[in-house]
Image (cartoon, one colour):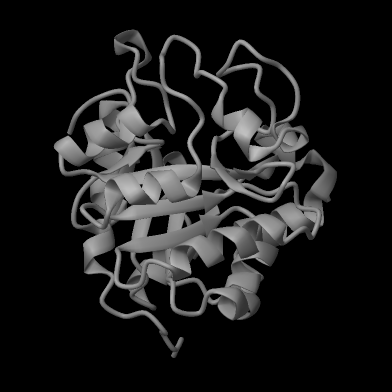
Length: 255
């Protein structure tokens, strides 16, 4: 039987988790911003956020590898230092790109935080180490890490053993160009959790439309791992998540 370092993760799936915070661009509340986190806290929802690395090694709360979609600036996030990134306004908002530290200061343990470590699948663990360092300064707060990259999740076993870790996964990686360079064998290994012995995840986050598959089913029902589903946007998604997962990572509506 799989040995769990982290039993008692009930708090993680107790409430719906707002994808990149409770954002609403039409209302000027942008994803992964401080206002999106404030809105989630007000609704008593958990918060999921993404982190990227700045040029000077800081963990910034931002989803994309480039600035173009969410700001009036372009170029790679990793090309700019934290101070420069922190001065950039998010499109349609007064809010700036926050650091992970600033987000944690705001949340102050009031709701669970799920930190997704973005990865170029290049073996670089600088962001993982920095995020772990920041979280280590806040013992006892309801925080977990997750990543699509099995190498990062495996590294977290050593780097951040006290913080629960999860793998984000799906059945078909070929549908996203981001994963093309990994090739079919790696896709298959990730879809079937063939890295399980290295990663030893404490929970899973699975694509909602792929929930009826062996890997998430067995992890939840045979091993008792909490299973969340991403990203729930429609009533059909919501029904699927309610039937096959313990909680949803949602966006575009208020549960």
